[in-house]
Image (cartoon, rainbow, N blue to C red):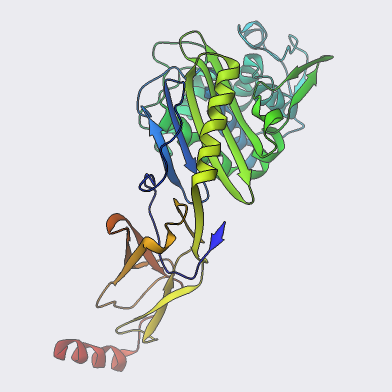
Length: 373
């Protein structure tokens, strides 16, 4: 990741302006983006509804991780296996009827072995019944902005009313990595898991082929084809790809690798400004202080085609007049960014500190000043 001393910000946009054309990709739809900046680099039919197959299990994991965070589940908690979980068809971790299994083992069975039985057992442990758990899945999908997704089960087994898109699945994987980084690191890079004296490998071939890949999930049904969401971290820069509808297990790995390599090879992530550092001091009226420091709450990182950083331009527009009180984190301005003369986006500039209200004399004086101004 490069660092330059510019005070710019860029909203998530397609950053293909001056990059070489992407390679031909064999699949139904795909997305690749830079999680360091939040920008999508390339998308093809990303809003087309598809059967998500076992990629569904990312949302199952997300809801389970929430339950662990909220202490509604514990990793060492023992779960009794119901007949419904034991009998579920498809891929399985081979849990046994009414034999207790820990939440930690079930998570590994779900993530590494893609066990449908593990998903049902976790859903029942977290919500009492899979149907109730699915309501939580759909609630979270709506909350994080998955606009073209509906879940009917926790496993990804085919159902006409169970669907998603490449864009929504990209958003889901990005959110899981962001919200639960420790859980992601603990489970999604595991290459195999042994349970009930049987070892099963992770179906994500890139975990063996590319040492920078540390997740995330495979999926396959006859209708969905072979699908893979993959994430790679190289020198602190993380890319995420979603590939749906490949013709084979080998093809989904190969094409996902193409997307990741293209993004790393032809784009740079540029750190434009550190978070919580002032970029401008803005005048405050009727306040206990006459000014407030403004900046960004987190590091500002953008992704641009290699060699294109010098074509970024920015204009900072401040809110005037800015009247006290000003709260920390309050929006006090807007940064407009262009690349090579073309609009790229806007980003709010916020107050990095609070400013209280001045006394009666100070307020009266500033009132007069504003009238004359």
